[in-house]
Image (cartoon, rainbow, N blue to C red; front, side):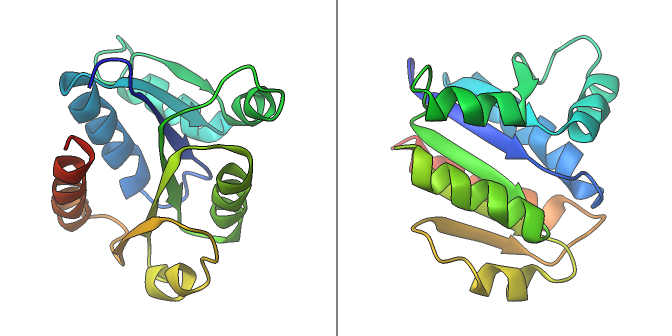
Length: 152
């Protein structure tokens, strides 16, 4: 998958599983040969930096708002985007990305209101939905199935 650019978009890190899943997915996709960029809000990025201080799991961590601006200004784009969302703000970031980028969209919807939030998605994407808040295993298993599809 060399040359395939993947963006992981992280919003508010209020729900604990976001950080572990972002670290896991970044590492897995990098090992599969994808060019992975993780873009997060300030708080989400700080959690990743502390959790992965040597940059073992996340090779490229950037500011989410700057990345969106770069896509709008046509300075960059991605082939695939995984958007993390557990609230309306995450939905807004994903909706924005779907309208400005040519990336194939995957919405990772998690948290107690995941089912309801997923039902409000009005853009074209594959939905990965898990009502988990703390335990990342069920969401990890769903993402493993999706990453098998992405590599085909």
